[in-house]
Image (cartoon, rainbow, N blue to C red; front, side, top):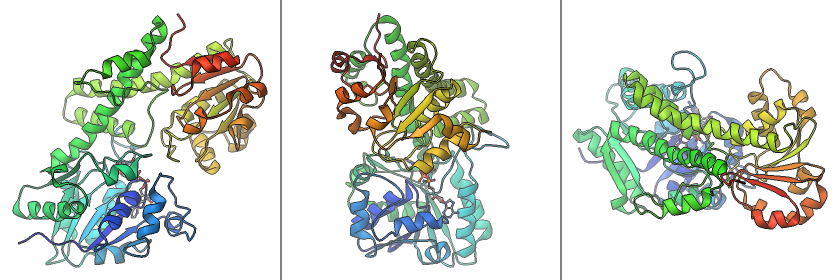
Length: 470
Ligand SMILES: NC(=O)c1ccc[n+]([C@@H]2O[C@H](COP(=O)([O-])OP(=O)(O)OC[C@H]3O[C@@H](n4cnc5c(N)ncnc54)[C@H](O)[C@@H]3O)[C@@H](O)[C@H]2O)c1
């Protein structure tokens, strides 16, 4: 059997991965009809909004959707129709950490993947290539195959591929236009290899073939967890060193620069910060920890778990530095927190360090004033009520205020905390901010983005992560 030439793609899940990924496929492959479906009507409506108020903020995304939507890119809640018509189906649903039951707090909740898989089995009337795009534990494809085969109709065969997504939020479109690699995992049978070729041919419309890597299914699944674990490990390593710098008077910027010059190490992902966030790093490492424990490899589990623990320590350490520096109490003091997204150029707040900081400041009874250029206020209230359980939002609102600008957040504040590296925070008129603040005016730069010397000249008392005062 020759590889199928893909002409219709369905993507289940119109989130941060499914939306941008399949919008770019549609843009680059005008001969393929791409339908992205989701159960969430509000999300689909936003993707279809006439004024392109998309549900996700991502530089360059609007332009891609403007070019392809209505041409060969469609967003819909009609999941069944899209499944029926497609030759190839991406499963891009969420796989959060389980909150209860076996493996709670570590294992991935595969309920959404299973429901989507069962729907494909129930609806499909012809052969489909089913592609696992979500990040999943090793051997999930095997479970998907069992479900599909047990529930399929006669003469309806399914080939399962793993095609993990390596895009980074904030640079998703650039990453998708020019990926370091596209990874496709398949069974090493002739049918599996044919399916792999069909998907590789889709990407080959714009990705150089030497960047399209084809491997076995389980290697592909594990490679995604491994890549995220190694990236997060670099951040935790540099953050661990930042604590040593602060205690000794060394400067983490200088240390990272010197270390990164080593061509075996390289300069990327060596930036100390208040801690990593996002929907993936913590979840995927915990997944790896769970996998290691299930495989009776406790030392391996402990090794990776420490990467997450170091991240928690970094956030707690930074919050404590703020309290200690403000004369060991922030009760009743105004603290401006600049940035709520987990990193710049995204509106995503999942696992954002900002949430932990505000939670700690709230517990210390500070008056917190928050500004973020992209995150919706409704999202901030949702995150804070989840982070401070058992406290009604009205009580939180007595201590937390959301502000429309940097200046308004900082007005009357005793301290400013930089929690997200938004470019706009570098360009603020800091002299004007200083004039509006209580004195002494403190700045805590959790992202190493401000010019500490210039701020000190203005009069600020500046604390930068990883920079000791010894
Ligand atoms: N966000 C990232 O940067 C990133 C990067 C690489 C990989 N991933 C992985 O990709 C997957 C998706 O992540 P995301 O950030 O896009 O999640 P998301 O929560 O933004 O989107 C998932 C979407 O799937 C929809 N959905 C769930 N079940 C469905 C069903 N049965 N039918 C139709 N729609 C359904 C949800 O309504 C939601 O809109 C996860 O496994 C994640 O780990 C994420």
